[in-house]
Amino acid sequence: MKSIKRIIALLLTAVMTMTMSVTAFAAGPTNCSLTVNVKDGQDLKGQTINLYKLFDVTVSSDKKNYSYTVSKAEGYKDALVEVLGSPITTNSKDEEIAKAVKDLGKNNSIGVQNFANKFTAKALKSNLASTATSNKIEDSKKSHTFTDLAAGYYLVYVTGGKEIQSSLVTVEEGKTNTVNLKTEAPSITKKAEQDTVSIGQVVKYTVTGSVPDTTGYDQYQYIIHDELTKGLDFVNGEDGTALEEGAATVNVKVAFTDTSVTPAGTTPTTATLSGTNKRTMALDLSEWVRDNQTNKGKEFTLTYYAKVNKDAVVTEKNKATLEYGNKPGETTTTTPSEAKTPTYPLNINKIKAGTKDDRLAGAKFSLYNSESDATSGTNAIKVTGSNGNYVVDPTSRNTEFESVKSIEEKGYNLHVNGLAAGTYYLVETEAPAGYNKLTAPIKVVITKNGDDFTISQDGTDETDKIIDVENSTGSILPSTGGMGTIAFTVVAALLVLGVAVSFIRDRKKEN
Figure 1 (cartoon, rainbow, N blue to C red):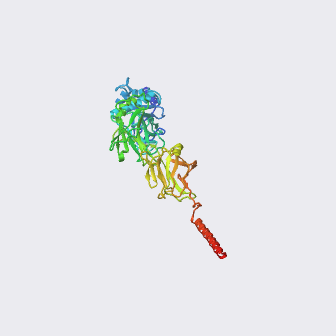
Figure 2: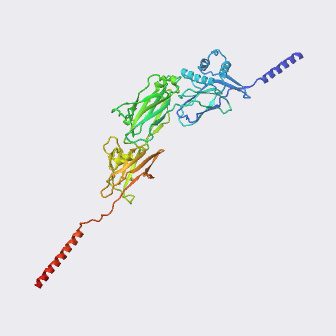
């Protein structure tokens, strides 16, 4: 009996010893968090972050050992089997599938990244339900935190990126879990060929983008919008061909930056117009980017033209935006990319010499682009207008602009709008009655200065951006043949006559 008891005691001791030697695993908690950070220079506004928990995870108490089991969510195991491929099958055990992922490579290796991207594409094609989603992020921010997550191995995907570059991360309890996004949101940039413009000039605009990765999307929206200010009008080409009245489209050109790239599908050649005076353009490239998935990531340009009209101002700028997404009605619109094409005014204060505000009406001027033209009086800039307010107008026959006595609430009495930055020569062609006309051109230099401008007169900066032009005058000059001389002549004649009469009278007395 004692022997039996001794044997049982030894067995219990052995069991206890074995139990103590096994690492204790904690059950997977559900109060974990994950912070997703955007890349430098990027923003999460308008983006949607989806999480897919590929594996549940339990962690040993000493945080040294991890046990992974395939997610029970519908379709996840089938997706893992398809993406990993042989020798993994639907009959493979969870630990075998987890080991296949581990064997793909080290952190950030090409093999691991390819697995993440392939699983994402499969999830999108199969419409796998995400484990958690941020929904569309409405605010501008650099990170987003998910809370109340179950511990696990997560794939992090941002919808509608330039390319699928999903991230993988193990989320644990009691740990600061973070992941840095690798993908970038689609974006465009718009630029004008000219820094400043004059009225009547044709401006070439270029919008640059790249073909996004639409893998897994049955439909993908990619639409470029452009809105001109009232100082610009769309035209068909660099020659400034005006649109026909009521035209609903404008000519555009879409081409890859790398001329060796062969575009697929049909490349659009026109964009639709809408809005007041047809200044809003939309180019739907959705089908084109889907057709060009063999060229995904490749840069392309969209070019088109606009003409500066009489309403152009110094703050002239217009913007282009990109609308993209995998579902109509749930698209994201990028921050506008602005192209600034300012045009500048020439403000003239025509005054009497020696005064500051004795303004003179009736002075006429012409403006030239070169000193030689100013000297010869040829090729003057054409203008239209009246009452002291004029605009550059290449279609006009008039080349003169005339000052008025005053322009209400202005510190000048002559205004010409629509000049590009540059050097000009101002010539007075006619002075006000009673004043001396200027004998030499005035050199005027307009310089772009960021969003503002400076102006100088004969080398001197005008801080008020007004060119003061003085005309001199004076009192009447001395003359001859006036009434004063005639009076003296009459008096002299009378005196001579008196002397003659007196002489004759005296002679008669002598006789």
